Amino acid sequence: MSNTNPNDTKLEQQRSDSAEAALESQTEDSHNESSEAAAERIAANLESSKEDK
Image (cartoon, rainbow, N blue to C red; front, side):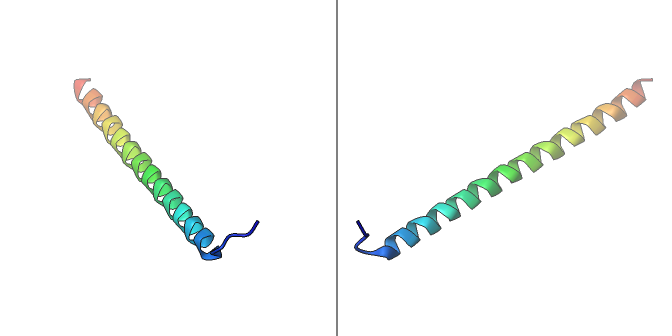
Protein backbone atom coordinates (compact mmCIF):
# COMPACT_ATOMS: atom_id res chain seq x y z
CA MET A 1 0.00 0.00 0.00
CA SER A 2 1.43 3.37 -0.95
CA ASN A 3 1.09 6.68 0.82
CA THR A 4 -1.25 9.16 -0.76
CA ASN A 5 1.33 11.87 -0.16
CA PRO A 6 4.94 10.63 -0.08
CA ASN A 7 6.14 14.04 1.09
CA ASP A 8 4.57 13.38 4.49
CA THR A 9 7.01 10.54 5.05
CA LYS A 10 9.98 12.72 4.14
CA LEU A 11 8.81 15.46 6.46
CA GLU A 12 8.32 13.03 9.33
CA GLN A 13 11.81 11.59 8.76
CA GLN A 14 13.31 15.09 8.78
CA ARG A 15 11.52 15.88 12.02
CA SER A 16 12.76 12.62 13.53
CA ASP A 17 16.35 13.30 12.42
CA SER A 18 16.19 16.84 13.75
CA ALA A 19 14.80 15.73 17.12
CA GLU A 20 17.47 13.04 17.40
CA ALA A 21 20.24 15.53 16.62
CA ALA A 22 18.86 17.98 19.18
CA LEU A 23 18.77 15.33 21.91
CA GLU A 24 22.28 14.17 21.06
CA SER A 25 23.59 17.73 21.23
CA GLN A 26 21.80 18.35 24.52
CA THR A 27 23.27 15.18 26.01
CA GLU A 28 26.79 16.02 24.87
CA ASP A 29 26.53 19.57 26.24
CA SER A 30 25.30 18.26 29.58
CA HIS A 31 28.13 15.72 29.72
CA ASN A 32 30.74 18.40 28.95
CA GLU A 33 29.37 20.73 31.63
CA SER A 34 29.40 17.91 34.19
CA SER A 35 32.95 16.96 33.28
CA GLU A 36 34.16 20.55 33.52
CA ALA A 37 32.47 21.01 36.90
CA ALA A 38 34.04 17.79 38.17
CA ALA A 39 37.47 18.88 36.96
CA GLU A 40 37.08 22.21 38.74
CA ARG A 41 36.09 20.45 42.00
CA ILE A 42 39.10 18.11 41.72
CA ALA A 43 41.42 21.07 41.16
CA ALA A 44 39.91 22.94 44.12
CA ASN A 45 40.28 19.86 46.33
CA LEU A 46 43.89 19.45 45.27
CA GLU A 47 44.67 23.08 46.09
CA SER A 48 42.90 22.71 49.43
CA SER A 49 44.85 19.58 50.33
CA LYS A 50 48.14 21.29 49.41
CA GLU A 51 47.28 24.21 51.69
CA ASP A 52 46.43 21.86 54.55
CA LYS A 53 49.87 20.22 54.48
